[in-house]
Amino acid sequence: MIKLENIDKVYRTKTVETLALQNVSINVGKGEFVSVMGPSGSGKSTLLNIMGLLDEPTKGVVSVEGNIIKAYRDKEIAKMRNRMIGFVFQSYHLIRDLSVLDNVQIPLLYRNMPSKERKQLAHKALDRVGLSARKEHFPSQLSGGQSQRVAIARAIIGNPEIILADEPTGNLDSTMGNEILDILIDLNKNESTTIIMVTHDERMADKSERIIRFFDGCQVN
Image (cartoon, rainbow, N blue to C red; front, side):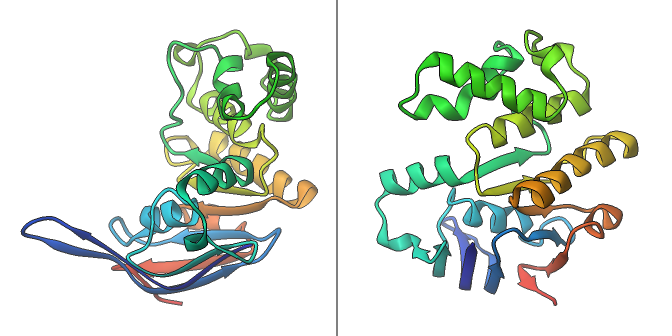
């Protein structure tokens, strides 16, 4: 599903050069649930940004479903990202002035889709994460666990083949964290969604099929 070959990522300023990733090669198969672990600053979020086509490597090749990304124009990459990849972030990234229902619909605004169909899919996604009763609420009226459920609903509304989750349980207590992880596991098992999850929590990572570990921008396993 996603293949990285000999990836380097270098951030440069006028005075400093930082090597965020070095010689990284990863192959994630369709329907896999993979966890990425490592200390802060080890390159995990940079890796996820490259996998999610939000950033380009300085060196190396990124392929999605066998398609080499460098062969595509920016507009084509954006379209591929919107249709194939859902994102879940630690801090939710919900828009405060929009209702839960409107927040969930955001990815579909970039598609040529009638409003009625968008709302139907948003209702379905919220039902999928057990949050239909909160559809008219605003983010400020939600708990952390509820906010993350909204974020997952937003990620899955477009029926993506891949979900990239960056510390999805990091701001939650253990009970809420387990509930969020159960949703991701269910998506993986019952809908064959490929899940790549960055986490610091060894207990959460142990529930995935495979753990990839990083240290100072390098794979260590």
